[in-house]
Length: 189
Image 1 (spheres, rainbow, N blue to C red):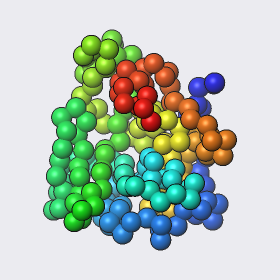
Image 2: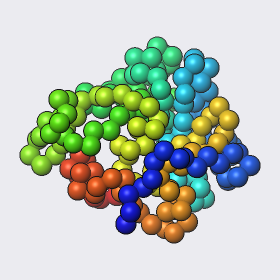
Image 3: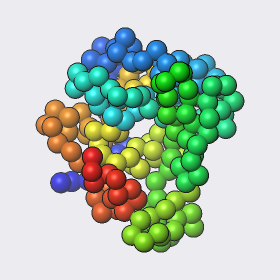
Image 4: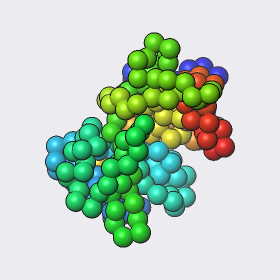
């Protein structure tokens, strides 16, 4: 299978996709709008976007943003920062938790990366923040790399995810072996 093309994202305006804000949890919308109002880019990302396109009710909603974890924490009093290797913010609304991750940069060659280290066969990296365009490269599968932008309700596809969803195809982003070494749990998905 060819490597996903990057650099020329397919951007679908609201009129060209089926996702409606009515399908997104009120709490996820609060996080998206709160980050946008604070001056940050904020997108719904991952399996929640995929599920909405498939007509399935998402089990949760994840947000990716240009805000650093500390900025997310400052924006939402009901949030906690978690994780060491991958610093995330959990924004709590009763039993619902919205996971917020800062856009991350990808490292193609762990041996050239001062932030990477090996733990057995796993590649470990500390937090390296980046742009949405860099973030897409570090995601696991194309179908989990769609971004729903709250500022204009557009859907952004950098890696052919829409075609993969239509074909019911699961494809890794980048080299499968490297993706599985970064996170062996990906093999179970």
